[in-house]
Length: 86
Image (cartoon, rainbow, N blue to C red):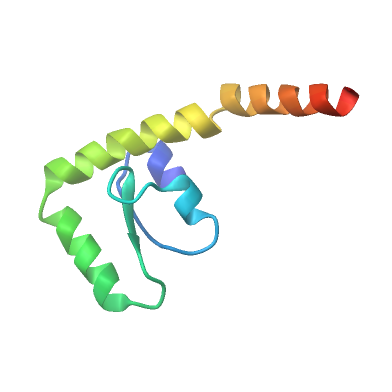
């Protein structure tokens, strides 16, 4: 999430909650866990195509800010409190 907020394309393993944050092929690349060849391939793919990496970085930053920035978190918290208050 921090890398996305900085506008950096992300290469991550497809585990846990990561796929909820990183959209494969849009905001970054997801690779199978425990697959070093897939990881190397994804990294080489972005290194070989700086334009694609930059585009993913921009989209990742937009998503990080829209979904996880303070205004979004404050709005989500307000909704939660409202629901809890009944």
